Amino acid sequence: MFLGMGVGYLIHEHSSPEYINNFAPKIKLLGTAFIRLVQMIIAPLVFSTLVVGIAKLGDLKTVGRVGGKAMLWFISASLTSLLLGLVLVNYFQPGAAIDLSHADTASLKKVMDNTQEFSLEHFVNHVVPKSVFEAMANNEILQLVVFSVFFGVATAAVGEIAKPVIKVLDVFSHIILKMVTYIMNFAPLGVFGALCAVVAEKGLGIFVFYKSYYLSFLAGIFLLWLILLGVGYLFLKNRLPALLRRIASPVLIALTTTTSEAVFPKLTEELERFGCDNKVVSFILPLGYSFNLDGSMMYMTFASIAIAQAYHIHLPIATQLTMLLVLMLTSKGVAGVPRASLIVVLATCSMFGIPPEGIALILPIDHFCDMFRTATNVLGNALATCAVSKWEGALKNE
Image (tube, rainbow, N blue to C red):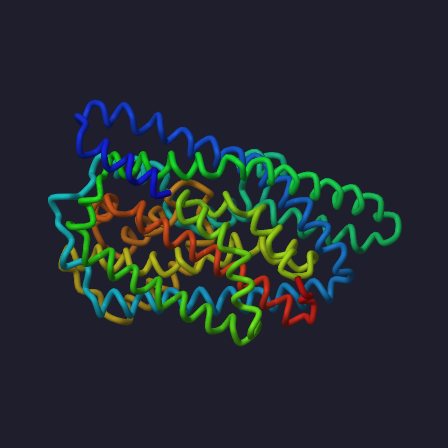
């Protein structure tokens, strides 16, 4: 990580713009290759583990109970994250300090091309799969979760005759997890390439121009971590430090690669080693990747209102609370594309009369914000899985 930032900084400071524009995309391929290797196994792992998890949970009543507890955690955590972002952005007023001269208009088109206006039809199309194979091919995790839940419940309902299918999928998931150990050997190269590319392009001087915005956001992330760890301690007590040691590697990889998908298989493995029931892990973690994005949720309110502040647009508290509820819904209807949080922010700004071009104001610093919101998403999902395991009386010793 530090080597990548160091090499990137040297290239940014001592190379011509032409060389940097040629170098950055090439070195970034290291990170792209690592992420694609992980994405290769996400769909089969989610399907196999979720079906086996639901089938092993047994009847529909147990599935509903565990799922209900998970959704209670997810909704509570999401609302806490959104409200925290709302409070902090109004307190620090970081938008007033954003320098309009450093807006990244060149990258704005890429984000806008991935944006679709939110509608109920778009939401339903994104959530409900028309083909499981299409969902797997596009790594549409939420659609895959919907299919896997139906398949798992049906498998459990069939009873004895379905046991061979469960056994095959159980073995299949263990083979996929074994592949994870091979793929994770490429993690250092991926981390190096991802950070080297972004520092070579942007340079560390970007922090000077966006100091107020970035430090305010980091303060929010720090407070959110304190809240999450405090609630986690209520469930795990003195086992919390052991959990943090277990998930330190996945969190660090998520931090540096800015993708939580990259650590999904490794996080599954570490949570089971920590003592979480594999049935609960298989069921809760895929759901969390769709519904429990604590860091991203906080950032969405933070960024949306900061852009309004930069344009001196006053938003009454009632409007901001409405925006919060809209973000709560629209964040569940975004496809798994890069910078998904920005796409939600862009769509939300358009709905509330904030110039959508304002997203260009925060693009230069967004990669560094994305690092911490992604790491927070991973922490939140790990704590949610452990809490539900404890809640179910299914948390074993390591």
